[in-house]
Length: 271
Image (cartoon, rainbow, N blue to C red):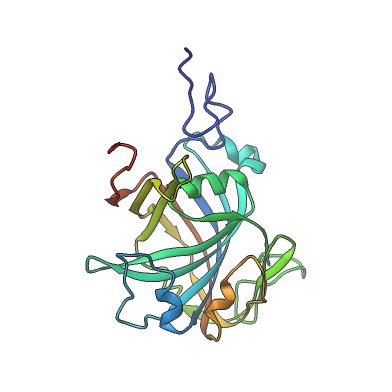
């Protein structure tokens, strides 16, 4: 039998056909963050056991649009940009686990298959979608400047229906892009058993944090957020809500792996 190569499926004779190259992965991009406050009960229903609400401002959440360029250590994707560029939107909540505060992507949407596959490995519950966000410009009139008065728009759609839209106007700068997405990430890696009888063959809590962060200035300002009704998404469960503020930042970082904090016993091993 052949020994197939590749970090992820499909594993092939050379590994070149894998949907995703192995880590480390490097990211550079623009992030538009809208923080808002909802009823803490709406956050609690997004936290599986044994995760708990944080004590300080438990109803604070963030919806983040990101326009990324990513690559592996060979950097070959940079010269083949269809394999490097993607956009995503993620809803971040905070939670407490064993006395430590974490950030957690409760929902996340992405527009490229390699980014979705990578997210599933990391525990991000990614779904395919259509995402757009205004890009800043340095020349001409067809875009905002990263300066006071610059205006940005962002949209998210799934299955042909818009599920979120935001507008942001820069008024100044800030020390940080909010507080909700400022902790190590805590995610669930799960896979139903092939018997499809209610058991999971994989059920873990994992944490990760990037390294080699390279961060631009934070631009802060006013934000507006609309969450339209949708038959296949549940963002409207966060209504009513109050917008806290908006932030825009250009960022870079790298990721190589994480840490398993908890793993359920594999039911297949006990049979």
